[in-house]
Image (cartoon, rainbow, N blue to C red):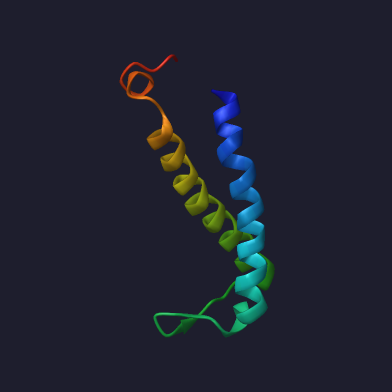
Length: 80
């Protein structure tokens, strides 16, 4: 089970870093608005929060891929 979690966590961590670089190469966090209001947090906080959001979303996609690739007997009768 730990191996499957690492199949999800490590690639999603790397891709979250790549996505972070791509997004913030184009967007300055100080120029961002939320419903017409500017953010009152530092650039580093925006970078950190967005990295964890990217990591979470990519991890969910990876977890769904792993779950969908499992044979039916492993899904229906997990070995916890």
